[in-house]
Image (cartoon, rainbow, N blue to C red; front, side):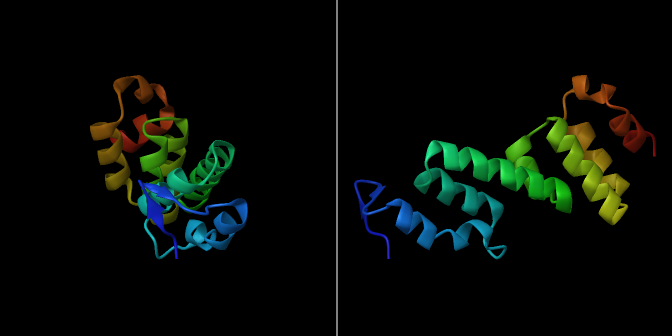
Length: 117
């Protein structure tokens, strides 16, 4: 078990990080909690790689939770497209795009298509 002293984990070596690496892939733990754990315990370079992995996995799976990591970006649009491809739920995708993406992203033809449906 981890012990905390003044907000820092005691004994979090690379070996211990590996010991808790199952938390990074555990689907029963929310994406936000997995990222919080990673922010606290991974080095900067490992954290960057991990976040890139999560974004790619979110795109592949059409996981809308990935929007927490991408925000309104091309990767975010790709997540919405993958979600639409797997669910055919154009209403949710259009609502997210209209309500949360800046107008500058509306030049992407996919967003125009979603809204026009």
